[in-house]
Length: 195
Image (tube, rainbow, N blue to C red; front, side, top):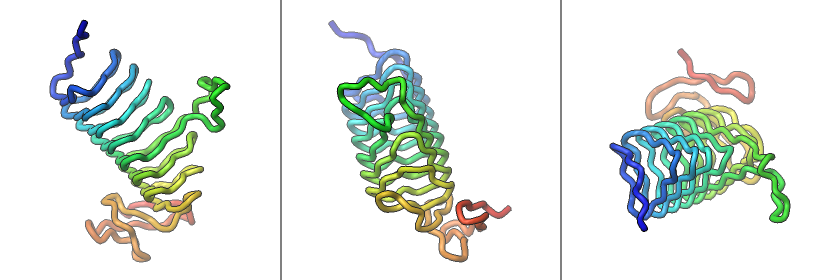
């Protein structure tokens, strides 16, 4: 017996993908091969879920997000608009998992703010906030909150510089080489756009 797929006008869903009941998907989104979207997920407009992505249950993905292949977004993860998740990056939702101990009431929220990038194979330990337009380098392990615009590399990840909204590494001048947008430091852990 074949179950009818829910209708999502303006959304491309590959025939091998599973989208459970109780999911909202915005116009222009693309759900690729072998994706599984669990109940309670809210997926914005123009989102791309690459091959073998798993989302949910109850995950929120903002407009314009790009989730590359082999990423699992577990309950507790929230992505604001225009977040990029590189291939095989990892999110956790329990700080001290054990196979024989149920900890579903201990899920920790992980927030990735607008425009942030998470590189391939990076690991994000649950309970952190990644600031807007931050850039997490490939393979980095994020164990604490990340300031907006921070460039984070290593294990554990440490801030090694600042990134512009356009994804360019800023030099000491704090001027984006792509857009000319100017920034200024506020203390040692915060960057602001000059008006």
